[in-house]
Length: 137
Image (cartoon, rainbow, N blue to C red; front, side, top):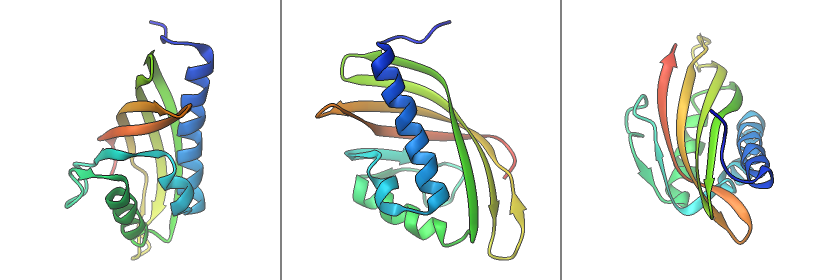
């Protein structure tokens, strides 16, 4: 099955996902936060207390706190499917991560995000990201 929407929009959405991953790897809260719409929602049912976080400011604050648990994180995000309908889009994307926890334990989670995106003032942003673990912790 092929993706839907213009090549320009799909490329911009791919770049948004790349920017998101780069900001994680650089531990850059401002850049990471810039990928979210103001009225967004982040669902991480695998992390206690982060099952559903609403609002960009709350999402960024939760991310900053969670990153303190990991002295090292490397994340790669890959889109699987992108469907654009006007100023709204959905994307299924996959993550491969390596992280070191405070106690030195290394984890290598693999996951899937089911994303909803919105185009605001010509810029694609995450409106909702819902994570599900596919493998690992």
